[in-house]
Amino acid sequence: MMEYNCSAEMNDTDKALSYFERVAYPPVFIVGLFFNVTALCIFCRLKRWTDTHIYMFNLLVADFLAIIFLPFRILEAFCQIKPGVLCTFLLCTQYSKMYSSIFTITAISFHRFIAVKFPFLTKALASRSKMIAISKCIFIWMIVVVICASNYGDLLPDKLQTCYDLRITEKLGTRFVYLLEILGYLIPVLIVILCSTQTIYILIRSLKHVQGRDKMERTNIAAIITANMFTFIVCFTPVHIGLLLQYIASDDSHDFVHVFLDVSEWIATTNCCLDSIGYYFLLKRVKGTLVHTECKQLSRVS
Image 1: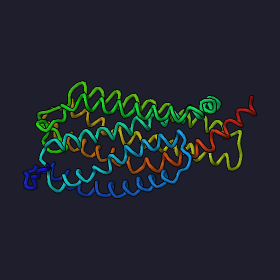
Image 2: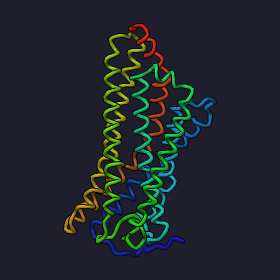
Image 3: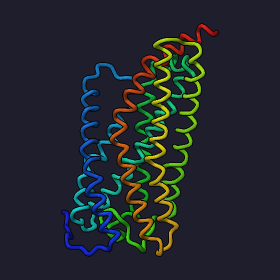
Image 4: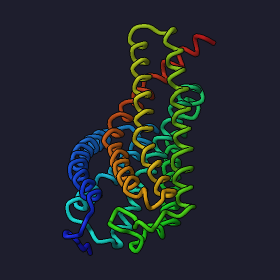
């Protein structure tokens, strides 16, 4: 059962953050809910699912996980929720959503690179592609659940100042920080950057072999991939810098770290407004047109 502390005393920094959250989170909830419901309607009308759709549905599930629990974050901005079991659950859900999104986007980037770099291999594995995609998505959620379950002790109520903030004297465990920073961010962002840049390079290099609609299609896809890559970096880099600062910072810099982490968490949350549209239509086009035309082009070259 939730308990509230609406009359809790706050310093100037906490008051400023409270006002920020009251203004910043409701639009994310409204826009994110609209986009994700729209994407869900599109999925419900699909008659034939591909491996691309499976990856996208997994990303949609992760985004929905953020959206449906976001009202608690908005409520916390108006009236503090006393730390309890619910708060531990909400924090675990927050981490689960973020890292399932990161891992899924990483899988999508790798999948897209393989489809463009090795089109004949993609065609050869077409009969097993959906099972491979399902296996990857299950594996992603297994990793996320194991990480949260093995480190939930860092998020217990007695370590929380408010429902979403650790006590000043508490820090995330060393193992938890390493998992989040290295496995949860550093490795995925390197894969996303490498795969995206290679895919863009292949697309740009192929422009001299095509004309008209195909050329425009590939140019647009390259631009969208570039935008997606930078969106990934912008959304998830600040929050991991904030988590690292929270771990290494001294008590004197607590206010700065608190503000930086709070704002960066909001930036990461905005990602759920972008995934359901950008990646769905991008990958639909990549899978439906790009691989097919790339196969024809390679056939002519060989």
